[in-house]
Each structure stands twice: as C-alpha cells, then as structure tokens.
Image (cartoon, rainbow, N blue to C red; front, side, top):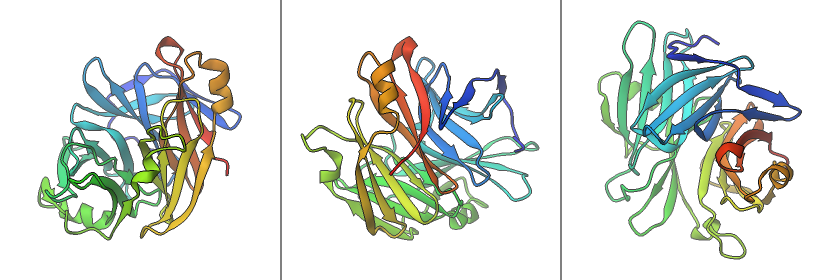
Amino acid sequence: MVILLVLYSLSSSVYAAGAATEIKSQFNLQGIFYDKDENLFTLEQDYKNNLSMIFYNSNGYRELLLKDADIGHQGFGVSTLKDNSALYILTGMKKSGLHILLYKINNKEKTIKYRIKLFPDSFTPSSETMPALSGDGRFIFVRGRSKNGKMFIRVFDTANIYSAMKHYTNIDLSDNYLHQWPISSRIASNAIGSLQPLQAIASNGNDVALMFGNARLTPKVIYFYTVNGKLKRIDTRVTSGIEDAMVFSQQNFYEPEGLSYQKNRLKILITYAKGINKRNVIYNYIK
C-alpha cells in the first residue's frame, strides 16, 4: 500500500500470534478498519493532549496518518482513489450527533477537511454518529438518536457523498440517505439489565454488524442486519478473547472496542486490563 502522507514513523508494535493480532500503543485504541486490500488502520485517542489519531498498521511498523482534536470517539473508515492520488479518512465529529468528518489527503495539496451533516435538527446533537465505511467502499453507516431517545441507523451511498465534496466543505446531506431503520431500546441491555452500549458498526457491503457490550467479563452481543435493515440473526454469546482476559486482566476488564470485516471475515478488537497492563488484541469472530 502507498501511504500518501506520513507524519511520523514508529517502530514495530504490531504482531500476530495465532489467530490474534496484538497492537501495542501508548494511546487508547477505539476502533479498527480493514480496507478492501486488507490494510489495517486504527483509531486511537491521546487523552492527555485531547487528540484523536488514525494509524496505518503493518507487520513492521505503524504510521500516523492524521490527528485532529475534532475527530469523534468512535467510528471511522479509510479509502483510496483508484490511482492512489488521494486518501480519504472518514470519522465521527466530536460531540456532534448530526455530522461526520471527511479528510482528503494527498501529497500535492494540504489536507482538506469536510464537515457533512447526515441527520436533521430533529435528532439530538449531543451524541456521536459512529460512522462506518463498508469494506467494499460502497456504503457509509451512521448512528443517530431522535430527541425522544430512539436510536436509528442510516445508510448513505459513498459515491454521492464524494460527489458533493467537489464544491463545498460544509455539506448537508441529511435528506439523501438510502435507508434508515430503528434499533430497539431492548438491545442496549443484557438479560440482567446491565447497560450494553453500542461499541462499533461494521459492514462488508452485504451484512451489517452492530456490536454491543460493556467492560465486564461477560459475553458481548452482535446483531446482524441486511443493508436495508432486515434483522438476519443475533449472537448473544460473543466471547472472542475472553479466555485471555481471564488470564491477563486482574481487574476483570473485557471491553469490545472495534469491529471490521477483513474481506468476509469479521474481526473484533478487544481491550482487556487497564493502565500499564492494558492489552489491545484483534480476534476472529467465531459463530
């Protein structure tokens, strides 16, 4: 892969062990994304300096592609033009439940930052949209909340969004979605009533996976939908990496932080333990 803008080069900190890949970072990992060529990117937060960052990760090194205080807490995607002339990075917008950010990066021009509105003012502005780019690059998925608290997923055509970016950097596409479907409030809690927040969205262009879970040492939940919102199945016993968490996490900390399709293989980023004992590991999802 050709990385178009390299801000920093870091020593090797990614390694694979069996079916798992550990990412060692001084920052807090908040998401993973595999592009159509199976390149791995991570969303990370530097709480000390109030910055969010996007890294490219390979077997031998990591590269910081982007950092910005406006990047949201969860959700992102990365794509390149066919001729590798530009890199597009999709992120949430910090403290905005209506917008996403898109960054266009290339070697000849400075980074262009686009602010794109995907939900109307009738939705609450206080949460974040948690955007996800499908692995085939065709769709963008976002989460919104109505002002009565109901959660929705919206689906947008990526090509339409890129087309709108040709003339403006502040864009309103809140009426141009392909699909919208509601998510039951019952999804957000487990059998004993503990809060199970939405942690990540992922899609391969056909299936859409929504992962819910807290940081307790308990199974997580993934709901699988079609792109137009038809529920296909529910897995309430997602335990990828739980055995490692039982061994290494003295605090019983086991939090799902990221979800992405690597081709058609679903991958889950798990963080277990905290502080100096923190580990960030990508596992295969097993049905």
